[in-house]
Image (cartoon, rainbow, N blue to C red):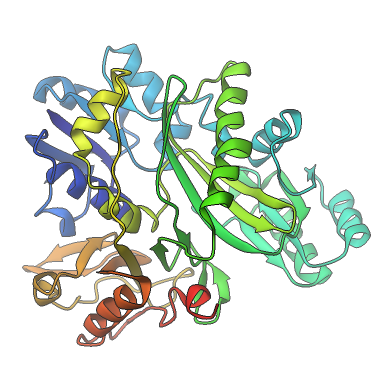
Amino acid sequence: MKVLVVGSGGREHALARKFNQSPSVSKVYVAPGNDGMKQDAELVPVDALNFEVLAQFVKDQEIDLTFVGPEQPLAEGIVDYFENVGLVAFGPSKKAAQIEGSKSFAKEIMTKYNIPTASYETFTEVAPAVAYIREMGAPIVVKADGLAAGKGVIVAETEEQAIEAVEDMIGNQMFGDSSSKVVIEQFLDGEEFSYMSFVHKGQIYPMVIAQDHKRAYDGDTGPNTGGMGSYSPVPQISDAVVQRAYDEVVVPTVKAMEAEGAPFTGILYAGLILTEDGPKVIEFNARFGDPETQVVLPRMESDFGEFMQALMNEEPYELRWTDEAVLGVVVAAEGYPGDVEKGNPLPDLTAAIESNVEVYYAGAQEKDGVLVGNGGRILLLNGRGKDLKEAHQNVYNEIAKYNWDHFFYRKDIGWRTFNK
């Protein structure tokens, strides 16, 4: 089969590589991709939101499956567009993608169908939101209702921080229309984990779980980012808890979406937290997480292309996963998640790849034959091992060999599991 992956980040690089490794896949394209992906896929210089041109390319190249990576094209209806012109795209419809595109929509679904989550209220004006914060106290969580590239969540330690977040989002339109409405919710304390599942027509194939690190700096300090690293498995989350999350969150959510007339196809990402009352939902995404994809997909032993064909054809398939541990570290441009410098040269990582450390590029561009930084998160390196300690050692030993001037990375990915 021929496959097109839509998107340009590290997540899409991981998808492209996994398809490229599949004996059942003959050709992988990525649109638009980035220059760091060239060894794994052919780049197609078409924007992920240019549905008409993408669809024509798929027809011209006789591509069998389009796999949509990022949230924006999903929220804007790429799957509906492709299906209307007779093409196969994997991902949720525009209506189903609201589970990520609108925090209030997701909360309403969870409340209606008794899916465990934090208590909350929704606001479109500053004054009542401030009154609610004063009433509830801190810590408290403020979320932009719409898409904000993983940066629309403020975990406020004080009431003042929460009020400032509300004023920024509603008052100053920090994220444009995405923050004209905010969800303010109870702060939940506990161990977080990412639980992703392949879903199609009621079939659910859960993946192995991962944990990511959202804060920019060591010790989980600094601003929230799109994610600075992740690892899988997550030893501090038991199999019994994962099973409970499947039974109490994943299955009811898939059934709820169907009941609401928005049946879900695609990657259902449940961002969960293990509280004293069991696992609860922090957020849903309608696509693979980034950087979780870069540590979860490498653990899949099955032929990815073959599995996707079986899933789309509603044929039974046994997904196999390795017991190996994978730990990934994001290298970001200085200044991320704020303003960053672009154009700084990246080290040549050929030796890292030869030493069995995988490199996934997110924000890289070729300039005069050299890859340079072209974004916030630039790349992720992952190490493998029989356990997380070995995976951690393998990747950090390798990272230390290179010069990362103008870039930074966290030195403590996985710390929660090592401190247990």
